[in-house]
Image 1 (cartoon, rainbow, N blue to C red):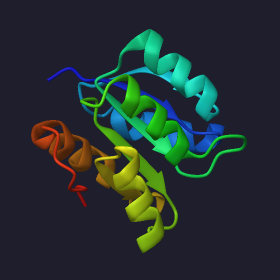
Image 2 (cartoon, rainbow, N blue to C red):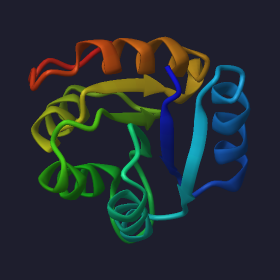
Image 3 (spheres, helix red, strand yellow):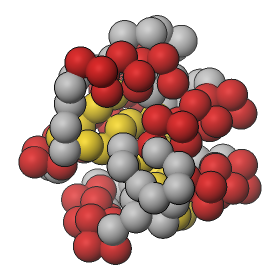
Image 4 (cartoon, helix red, strand yellow):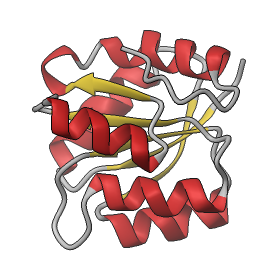
Length: 129
């Protein structure tokens, strides 16, 4: 499956890492954004199949960004990319429409998580882990 992925991450280095990991598959990074507002604009313009969102960005958090994206299109899998996976983040992510969390410490898990999220996404409120 040729997925089109939008990456919303403020760190250029982390965006490069995500790009390198995801481009090992047949997937395409269709867009990148440095912050939540730009990410929402790209989301509406590009209509990606999947979005990888950093939890902590200046101006607008990944949770707020995901909430806005979910209102636009609740069927697009949103994956939160985070250093901390506390119970509070997990609950906020679920409430914002995020379908999966991936720890930045286990960045290679993005591939399997995207595969699971796209296969299982059918309006479920369960997060893929």
